[in-house]
Image (cartoon, rainbow, N blue to C red):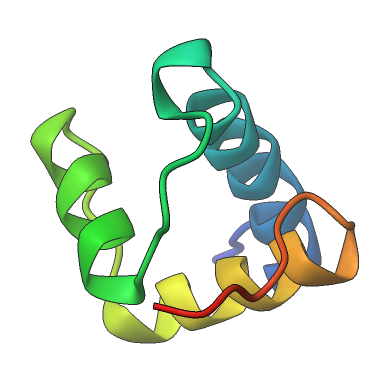
Length: 71
């Protein structure tokens, strides 16, 4: 029988991973876009799809880790 990690667990683990990265002091004050976040994560070997970045962005907002700011 095949099995896989649940979507909820994936989001929990990846949210913790991404949060720990963007909360590093060198990233404080950075204005993130989906593209900028995706590229920064890709640069360190974390390759997320656009849909996964959307999920992570939503969770980052829900958790109060990030907020929308003007460009």
